[in-house]
Amino acid sequence: MPDRIKKLFQSAASRNGSLSVGVIVLVTAIVIVVNLIAGQLPEKVKNIDISDNRIYEISDKSRNILKKLDKPVTFKVFAEKDKTDERIKTFIRKYTALSDQIKVEWIDPVLHPSELSANNATADTVLISCKDTKKSTTVAFSDIIVSDESSYYMTGNVSESKFDGEGRFTSAVSYVTGDEVKKVYYTTGHGESTFSSSVSDLLDKNNMEEEELNLIMKNEIPDDCNLLFLYGPVSDITAEEKEIISSYLASGGKVFLLLGDAQDGTPNLDALMKEYGMERTDGYIADMQRSYQGNYYYIFPELSSSAGLTDGMASDMVMLVNAHGMSVTDPARDTITATPFMTTSADGYAVTEDSQKQGTYTLGAVSTESVSDGEEARFTVITADTLIDPQVTEAFSTLENLTLFTNAVSANFEDMENVAIEPKSLEVTYNTMRHAGVISMIVIFGIPAVILIYGFLRWMKRRKA
Image 1 (tube, rainbow, N blue to C red):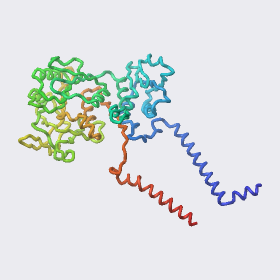
Image 2 (cartoon, helix red, strand yellow):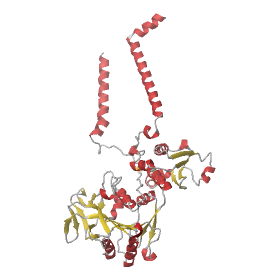
Image 3 (tube, one colour):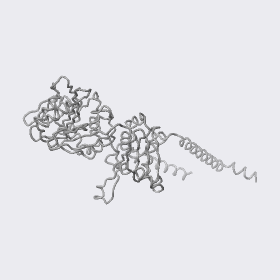
Image 4 (cartoon, rainbow, N blue to C red):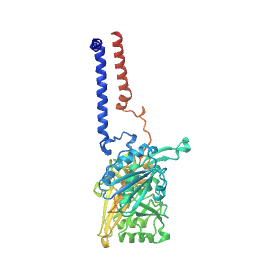
């Protein structure tokens, strides 16, 4: 029997089989060891984001906020953990692992229903709270994975459209650890536009509350107004409104104006701008150098980083459509300083029915003035309300219009930074032949072809042997 076993292992087939078994055992052992080591790594490094559209990727903005977090924050997740969407569980793990100040508790609402009423929460929500400030807020799972309800009427199914985990959590952490909520009043009565849901969502993430204000009816700006917003008025403000806004600025107020397509002249609004060193140019602005595919009224402005309004922008790609122009002039008082932050190229043109005047035109500027008690008045003007028009921002998804806008809004407050983060799309990107590049062609056709040819040649060789 020993001799028979010895002869068995002396054959070529036995030796090859033994080698294969040995390699399999070795590879299995390596995989086990690697998994054991990987299991001990911290959450923030062991998960590689291979998801479509990188939904688990956390921006530098959130990382910096979490790095500077100096107050304890608790995430109470009211949900059955085993039944929770894996994407939400994974993101909670990755996000909370970035700060030692964050503690996570999972509470099963089925086993502990009294916890819901005790915490004034509902199932499938995350209660985010800070013991030091005694502030809390909730983030629903439906706000993290956002569904497109309108798709039901077209397809009969509700499709998932956006993943907003980072935006919701960063806004919540900023709110519960911050001091106060800012109040934004937007004017009405002059044909103003209304904020889109995307803009309102970004303001909400920056912990800003909106409320409309008709100055003709109220005749005063409320004391709790932190920012007065004029969004694309198509008719002029009255002389009385102009005086109210001027007085508000003189007391250290903040005003933000997005110019619209006024049907008639706007002498009162123009006088307010001129007081702060900004004079409107007649006509619409075209740019021969920085335009979208030869559409000279679709302008990509030149942005100045000196004002700090480009923070967090990766490409500085902002588009304005049918913009008006301004020039910076001498303000009414020496204490006022007007600073452009968005301009055309030198090949800009102010176009009217009668003329085309070439020059470099200002498309966005900020005027500041130090007033009594150390307060600073701030008047921001952008010459096109299309900056935040959803027909522009949604049609060109790579634009950073909304980032510039939220930066400009946040810049009005020294104790505030822009924490609004846009959601990531959950739409599946298909690699079609129409859009396939060289690399795509190699991956789709080249590699499989090489494998098939190699396999065929090996088969032919063995067949002839």
